[in-house]
Amino acid sequence: MTGGKSVDKFEVITAGGPVNVPLSPALRAGDYIFVSGQVPVNPETGEIIGRTVEEQTEAVLRRIDTILQAAGCSLKDVVKTSVFMTDIKQFDRMNATYRTFFPHHLPARSCIEIKLAIDVALEIEAIAYAPRK
Image (cartoon, rainbow, N blue to C red; front, side, top):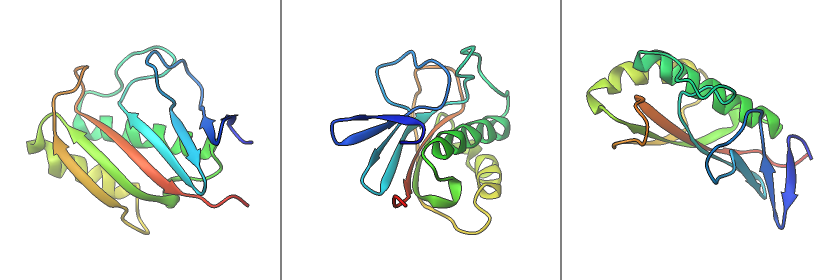
């Protein structure tokens, strides 16, 4: 098992850094990887990464890619994302950065405005299709 441990029928995917909340960074269930919502926070220090929505979008998508790589796949395998934004008026700015991470395909996506528990611009969760080899 790459980057994780087996818990019952699921494989928990870890990718460095402590998790201070009761969740798994990601789980493999069959051929799918479910990545928990990621925020622009350094997992080692707990510090917020970036000041702009563009910087925070980049930080979150890089973190998701790191987690997916621990599961043996990457952003190219993402089939669905959910983007939770604290200010939907920033959508176009987030979207411009988001698009650069998916040059060959665009996953299905939902985007909604919410209030987050910490003062950041967004949270993104992802589902990847990654059949075991």
